[in-house]
Each structure stands twice: as C-alpha cells, then as structure tokens.
Length: 327
Image (cartoon, rainbow, N blue to C red; front, side):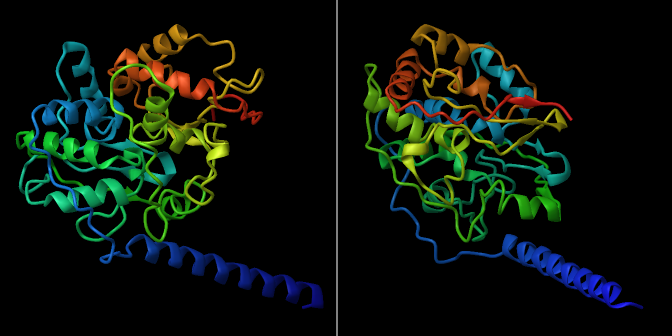
C-alpha cells in the first residue's frame, strides 16, 4: 500500500467519524428538553369579544389551522365554517412527516389538560409541555399579550375532538436540516421582539408592521436566516432556502422577495387592489407551505395595512430566482 492510498484511507475514516458524530449530535439535540424556559404570565381573556377576536387571530392572521387542521378540511372556510383543529400532517419528502398536534380541548389527544401558561409558552417560545422544542412554531410569530390572551380564549372554546395522536416522523437528515439549513430548531426556539402593538381598525402602516413582523409572521418565511441573524433591514428580501412541496416533495418552493425593488421584488408595480386580490386567490401550488386559505380570511383593512407597510420599506435587490422548481 503506497503512501497516497494510506492518506486517502485515513482521511476517509476521519470523514466517516465526523459525519457519524454530527448525526449523533443533531439526533441528541432534537430530543433535548428546556424545562427552565419561562412561562408567560398570560391567561385566557374573559373580556367580551375575546373568543371572536381570538378566532380571527388563530384562523386568519396567525394561520394556526393551516398546520393544525387536515389540509383537505381548509375548504370549510368557503362554506363559512372553521376547519377542526384536530391535528394536521405536513409531508416533507426525505425530511419526514411533521404532524402538528390536536388543538381542541380533548383531554387525551388535545390540549384539554394543558394550562394557559403551557399554551402561552408553546406559542411564544416554541417549547412544548414536555419541555422539548416544537419544530416550525415560528409560524405563530411574536404575538402581543392582548392578542395572545384572546387566542387562548378561542382555543379554550373549542369542543373536544379526538385524534389518532400520531407523532411526527423525522429522519436523521430532517433533524439535521431542521436545525441548520431550515433552522427552526435551535438550543431553544428564538424569541423575536414583538413589534409595537397596533389594534385592528383603519388601514395603517403601524398595523401592517405589527401583523407582518408579529402574529402573521410574514418575515419568518420571506427573510433569510432570521433565526440566526435577526436583521430587520433584511426582512422580506426573499429566502433562497428551498421548502419541499407537500404535494410533490421532489419539487421545491422558494419564498419570494416582498419589496418593491423593480426587478427582484414581487410588489413592484403591484397596486393595493392587486395585492388583496392575490391574497384572496386560490393557491398556485397544492403543497405550498403558505397558508393561502387562512390568509384569505383576513379583513381588507389588515391586508391593505400589510401592503402599506411592505410598500414603504427600502427595496431589496435580492433575486432568489423562480419561486417553484421541479425535480
């Protein structure tokens, strides 16, 4: 055996050991618990109108049922009813299958035995009742105390519906990607600053900012690496990291640039009416991670506020290319 061959063999063994150690590390960290994560001092609101305000936030703005209800049940919105949040399923190809849990009051498979503090911690910090991190809970967004109290009031009002209680199935590749490239799982779920609260009402840039950087969490998908590099100036510049199409996992979806940059921005040349019409239109791709059916339930005032806010932001020249790539 010559010297070059020996070097190649040794380097190969080192590489194998490093890969194995990396996989073991991410597998261990996936099951790590964070029992010391604080519980927000928030209880379900008992104020008049709290349940209805919470319903709007849960189903439309924060689009919780986009993940916590079966995808085929979202058509209930068209009939004027709400999908039952008995748990959903998100196929992610080689990453595995995520199954967001039942959010009805069922005591065995839902949140019937959860305290308000446990639910508030899960929404705000992404830490579950058992202390483990809940992947992808960035979808909830940074929610103001008043809105979070209303959301809890609505969730408490849901009648119990049993589910099969199946857990997520995530491959070792998925555990690595969800903690690195997709970066939704860290040492603890990132706690983003809550933008200045602006109540629902008239169209305003302030309301648009609160929704887009708060419970609507638009910045979470349409920005790059916000979990590691929280740089508000780069929000909404688009995300070059792919997301698998849940209906065709071999295909990839990219969250576009939502600024008015003349060549890279999706809002370039778009009117306010165009924006609202697009938000109310059916989804273009069956497995898109964007909760189109939910966001279409938002009021005109809130959608116009988001448009007003995005339109006045500094244009960003990040061109992420096609938003949908096959194969």
